[in-house]
Length: 392
Image 1 (cartoon, rainbow, N blue to C red):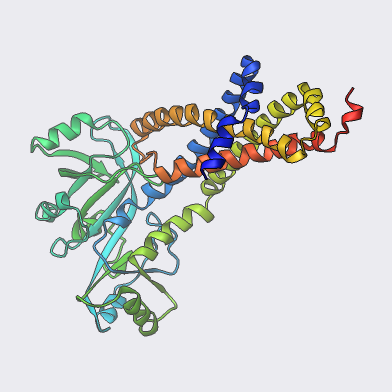
Image 2 (image 1 turned 60 degrees about the horizontal axis):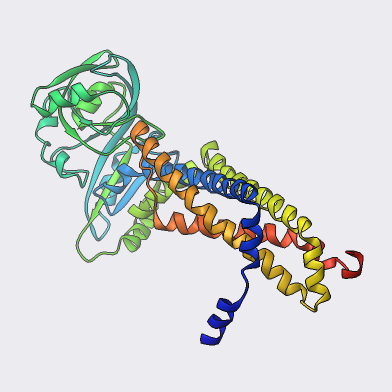
């Protein structure tokens, strides 16, 4: 190993010298790599924010196993199933409780601007907490009051004045489907691609807001298990015991995966983000290839001289790959830096959970290396097939 390191130290950095000789071309090449990295970072970031925002409520549900309708698509379009399935589920060994959760999309008037916007409203029995949210669980008695809801302070939109008033203990009134409601408390979850925010209330208030909705038509069944029981085993027992014609039984983790799968495979959004990453990769390959190909053509006589001196194609490949590696590393740094700024800008404007992660940085860096290596391999084809005698 020491000998290998010493050999690298004695080696002339031909790749760096060739790139640095034409500095304007070098800067353009780095800009191209950085732009390709920026495209990949933004598309992967938006895709991750989509999944994270879509499953925020799933993550905080107080349930080991979940029952949903066979027709359910995502949390905003859950359909419903008969409540008697929950009573039946309570008979399965290991089930501690089986509670109903009601969800629906609703159009409400922003209490501050009076503009209509879409929200997700959730109702449950306040005597049986449905979320692992301390701020909600402290206000369970509040949502028992008629026409009272809790408001998601991290919702997308202009709510600063209303939130400040509610924080001071002053209720704010607004309308949902022409029914006046009172906002008496706050919690924080955040917006998603499907809704600007969420509201939480009691099951009784929920049913009053939707008089055509039957109490026996449940959106989500929350199953809590007795200590010591494995969720997968109990879920399997529930699948065997309950009728399969109208429900699905999922573990908590499977319910989260169910939501992600909907956005990834059943909507155009998931495909668009995946396509965007692919386009960024292809753009990077083309840009780096153009730079390396131009550089190879400009130094063709030098490469021919090396071949005439006895250097093999592997050595010449090493020089071009050295250039590709330099472009990958130095282009990645500004691409990631600009992405961090755009992440923060987007997060502030949309309330979406758009953050840089180590895994994503490694993923893009790996893609950048692969992108530059592919370009380098293509660019050296002419050198490998060239005859030194034809170069002079």
